[in-house]
Amino acid sequence: MSTPLLVTEITHCRRELLENFKPGEPADEAELKRLAEVLRLIADMATRIDREIALHRELMDETHARKVAAALGALHEQPETMQ
Image (cartoon, rainbow, N blue to C red; front, side):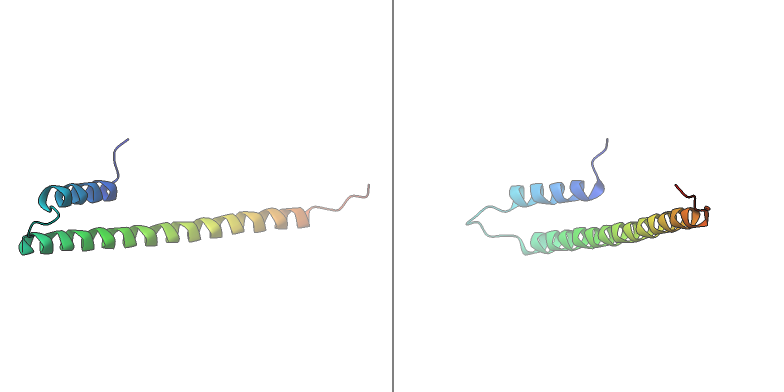
């Protein structure tokens, strides 16, 4: 199984932060801006994934509701028997 793109990007960004920025050392402003943009893109990706998941759940809930309604309708249409 392959690693999801979002996890790969987060791992890569974390590795770059650890390699390029040390406590107490001055940071390169251009590098900081580049990594800030990478983090913004990762956050954007995560937001889009969350929206897709929410849409999928909504569609699955509607599908489940239709199946339940159909099953209840089928039960309602069956003739009642006396026991």
